[in-house]
Image 1 (tube, one colour):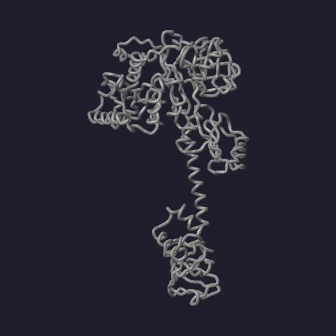
Image 2: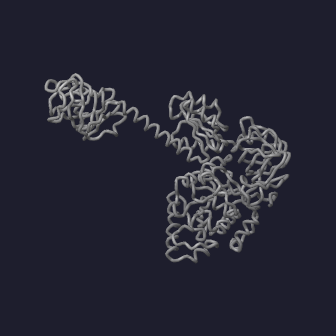
Image 3: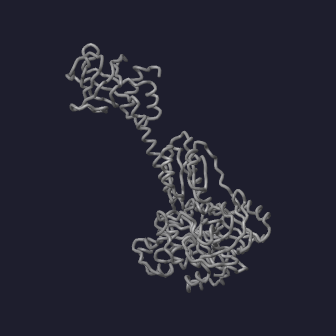
Length: 584
């Protein structure tokens, strides 16, 4: 593994795209691992990185690489598998992304999706060159799987499948045109500076993997000449903070620029600008994923781009997502440089908002972004586990729906959950960020509907009823009569009035088929009992009655429950208003 090649550095390749379009499966096929099947919800949640030396790339490409006719000078590729678009957004430095190139993964059968467009926005924003990996070609109906490069595989397909494939490819071309990008299948492109290369492939069968790597090598050799920064600082981003037996607290870092050595000062881009010294450095075996690999190799010096595990004292202020910078002796200058690299997500905090919790800066930024997209107010953000003090603070939030804590990638103890219930604070936690917000929104919808039904049940609903002929069951004390509900609904204890506005009395009981019921609706024929009313004196058979609706209830129905009103209800309200509130 040539970490110390001085004339160039390894390139950082970011892999991004829509959920479940095959990002991790594609990388797995290249490195020969099975990380995708072990991830939460089958979705990558944390940045994963793998160093792939150029010798391995050349072995995978085989004879196909000879077609490029370019001598490879790059030591290798550092592949970064981004969780959706959120991680790519946090993987930034001053002036752009840390990625030199990007692979935009698009399922050839589904085309562009919401997160594909989000990824495009970030690629455009950071001016990151990219190619499109059109994955899952093996799922095209009738496709005969071949463990070959794409062009050889295509030759063996039937004419029907070839036609179907071409339709799907030019569907992607059309979608890219709609987004102001010219593109074509990679083997048909003459000028890669003008057109986006589309490489058909499959992370399952391996078809097109050689082609994908060949295109990356070609682009890198022709258009990218990465050099180290002249100040000599080693620059990186913390992937994860871990406790390792024998080493204590360590940092897994993506080194995206410069060189770092044992004994260098390490400055962490937290609030206090923590300064420490590197004691040891470990790198994973080549072609192995940083987060899951068990075997590491000790190194004294390492050049970008690389994934490296750093051991140093005083790492309590380190969290995932923070930028780091190393220097041999110029600490103050390094601090100034580091401050210029840091870009903090700005949020407008609302005292009536929710609390956001995560184990990393990147997680917090993703939470903030999704909260904004879902128009959720934010009260606080923090990178640590939920404490009793957090719950006490959230107890003060008046809005029931905002009295919530959304925790990403952090476990919640049973004691904390129980205390939150006692304080009427709702906790949502998940290792899958989209599920976290889906759970919150679903709960909020259910609670709003529940409160709506409670409020609706307390209101007096408009109704028009008819005293049915030959249905006087008792004339008085109380009067019991048969009625039909022409519109609306009635319930016990509501008052009814005649068409001239005179009040009759309250409905004491409602009976249907000999059984007492609490309410009845349009079309129902029921018996009702009315206190202090005499049939023949106050009311007569065939009379029309209206439920008396207090003005407050009527206003509430018209403002908040208008969608629940039928045409019959609206007509009844007009008639009732003309009788009782002619000036309303």
